[in-house]
Image 1 (cartoon, rainbow, N blue to C red):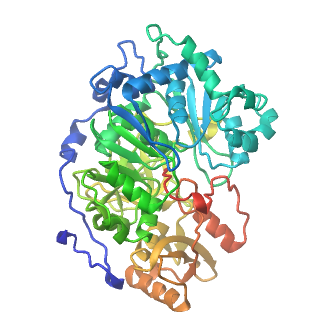
Image 2: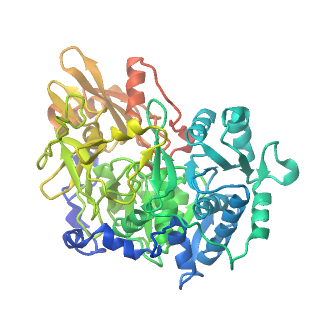
Image 3: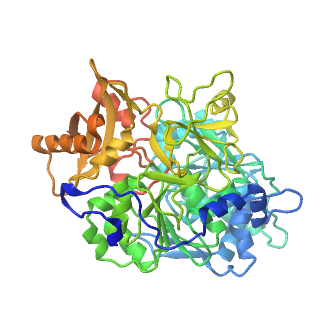
Length: 611
């Protein structure tokens, strides 16, 4: 690995321009980009000649009908229970039964079915059974408190909730009168005699479905490609959450990007650490990988660095998809712990949820012998849009290049940081100019609506572009570089400063584990840069270290470096793993903290990824 040209240790660490690909896993990017079309890719999936397409059929049934029938589809790991497995054939039959059970409850096309569950067989069967019944599946993160749960159930007009007794009694039962659309609550952990009033045991509902199920006559709902299939609520910062609607054809984008960006193929053992309560955990924890015929590993235990390394080693994981937050927590545990294990099967490590700091890319080589490949996408895009593809040189700090079939551009900004629209038109910028990252609609997983909010949906588009709200630049080779959210960019003495750039630079210091950067009002500069720093084990906060970090930042960044350093060992995160700069700013300035429904509790941090 000497070609990485990275000095190991001390403040002498410096960034690298490229991490060479270890093997050309998916062929030539430019050739694939020129030849690929979504229309041609539709032939990769089954569907039928009349335009019907169902996500669950594409993810499971077509494998259960072929040579992968007896291949393990999902392996459930737990700290407290024995490991269990479902083959593709078993997953097909059990999800058929789940669909039958839902239909017996009156669930039909367009009805909303929601899970509020840990990683468990009941969750996965509900996802697939809902889709097979032609209904719309909506995941909820199990660590949500009562307010965000009730709000999403109400906004999504959810008809069936599958959860456990504790979650129902604490988060839902006191507010049941405020949820007129909620007809059925199925509890996964009680028998008939113990079920609270107004609920039904999952075992009873599933038993009725099993009695009524006849494999010779069961049919998957004849959904069309543009029928609603998924409802994902954005993590949000302020105001009510946005419910993004995705259609059955999104499975095509899940499948294509799982092959192109994650390099998945039959025979792989794949681990995505994102909780299924988030869009990543659905798109790339369930649907995309199953469509590729892999074996999914899922673990219900909380984050533990040693346990994670043991899973990667003992389960012979070949592709590992996780979040920058989790990678930073592994980094904090030290590379020595990684080197106590071996990963002979691992060939691809991928990140999702927020931009990946260059230091984490290089650390992947130290820990795994592999660079970490970043990906970029959003709840609204439904699938990966930009990626450092396997077989393509990684440029640490870059999100990579657009997925074949995706057209990306950077648009000129207006005074508010968003794309400027004049006379209905926008202006596309050239290489290395900073503006709002935008995509040409046409990919299959693009969201088709915000629930009950057409005005908000319309504002997400301009002049034939989807506006992401992220500021970026695209270099001359087509690599996309994240600058920051439009509302996070710091304006200091005439400079526009992206917090991610500052955070990444400070993370190169050997004492720094994580950073959150905000703009602090200043009478002369308008704003100055202030950094909140979490230290690695073995380092203690001190005025001397703060001065050292300021000097380190100036050496790396010049005039855009932080002027103030504050130490914080518990930076606020969203439940999807992102540092909440908005909350840091509110606390610094004594402003209202706004919606806290997506703030992660420190004890639960670590594996959830969402964009």
